[in-house]
Length: 297
Ligand code: ADP
Ligand code: MG
Image 1 (spheres, rainbow, N blue to C red):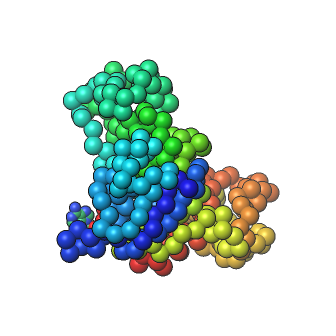
Image 2: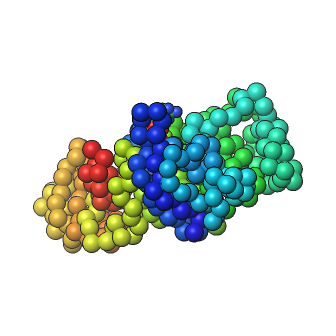
Image 3: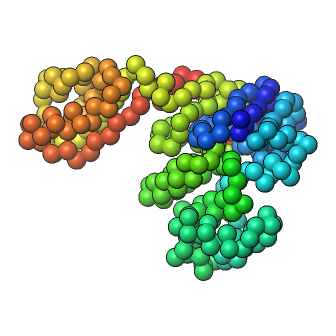
C-alpha cells in the first residue's frame, strides 16, 4: 500500500478541518482528491507530507509512519504544495540544483528533470520571469528530483490558461505511469482526464471513493456536438441510444445517451451521412458531475 490513512482528524483550534478520514491507495494508482474550497484537501496533503501533524489517527506512506519515520517519508514523497512556493529571484537550474543539494541527489539529476518537464528552453531564466505554466513545471521538476515513488500534487493546474492546463495534465499523466499520484482539484474534468479513481471530500469528511470505471458503468453519457448547420431534433433523436436532445444554442446540441459506450464515433457517422461538418465534439461523464453536486452541494 502506497498511502494508508486511518481515522485521521485535524483541528485548527476550533476549526475541524478533517473528521475521521480513512482511505488507502495502492501502488501505481492515480487518484483525484476532489472537493470544494475549504473541504480539507490541503490539510490532508500537508499531513501526508509531514508538513503538519494530525490531531488523531494514523498515516502511513510506503508503509512508513509519518510521525515516527518522518525523514524516510519525505524521501519517498514528491510534493507540489498549493500555490507552488518558489524563489522567484533564483534561476531555474540554480533552484533545482539547490533542491538537489537539500535531497542529497546527484546534480546530474537536475538535467534529467529539466528535460522530463520540458524546461530546457527556460532553464537559464529567473523563475520570476516564467509564466505560471512553466513555474508549475519547475515545481514538478523539484518534486521529481529525488525520484519519489509517491507524488502529492495540491491543485497543480489551478490558475493555468487552457494550453498550460493541457500541458501540465499531460506531464502528470506521464509521471503517473510508474508512480502513485494523489492530486487535489476542485475541477471534475481534471479527474476525468487524469485519474483512475476519485476520492471526494466535503467539510472534512470523505463522502465518496470510487473507481472511474465503476462510475461510468451503466450510466448516462452526454455528448456535446456543434455542427456547421441546423439539424432537426427528430433526426438526432433517431441516432441509436439517444435518450434526449437539447439545442444549447446556435448549431450546438447536447445529446444524452443511455449507454456507457463512447458514442462520439456514431455522432461522427451521423454527421457524415447527413453531409454536416462537426465543429466541436465532446463527451462528458455526467455521473461524476452529478455525484459531486449531490455530495457537496
Ligand atoms: P482545501 O484545501 O480543501 O480548500 P483546507 O485544507 O485548506 O481546504 O482547509 C480546510 C479548513 O480548515 C478550512 O475551513 C480552512 O479555513 C481551515 N484551515 C486551513 N488551514 C488553517 C489554519 N492554519 N488555521 C485555521 N484554520 C485553517
Ligand atoms: Mg487547498
